[in-house]
Length: 212
Image 1 (cartoon, one colour):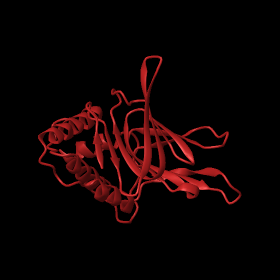
Image 2 (cartoon, helix red, strand yellow; image 1 turned 90 degrees about the vertical axis):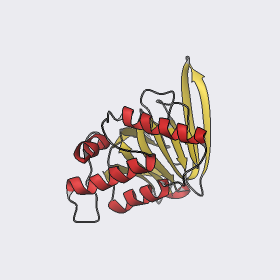
Image 3 (cartoon, rainbow, N blue to C red; image 1 turned 180 degrees about the vertical axis):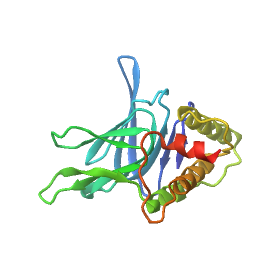
């Protein structure tokens, strides 16, 4: 299921997922929080939009974003993981006094269950080729004949490109954005193994720059 908001923010809810979205006003500022019970959700959030302070809570962690493209997988008592394609996500492990850690573009952060109970962070690592391909495959959706939905998808694509500071590229859909993003990652870094190298800064900007 793909949820597209009027400003172009996107939430993709994958099969077998249970979640709850809450919205509220705090000092006149819109606040959106997502409780992820289990499964996977992908968010593409504009840094200038009404959900720029989005937070995602799982059983093992709280994640705060400031405009980004990221995927959260919740595995209950086993822990959770967050993969970031663009921007950064701040993660705080539930029930600990640890300071938050940051997962940057091209990286995956994993929160693991401890044998004695509770959770602990694992240092962010480079997102693998297989993980990127899985995200790409899950995000593909059949096209709709609905003019209203097509308009919303066009707005979502425009918002993602604008937020990433990308222009002059021929990208006709959110799926095409993923295709080019992942393809250029492998071409730019000339990978010979199953592991994708991490990126510093904005992954979208690097990949599109080399795609033009």
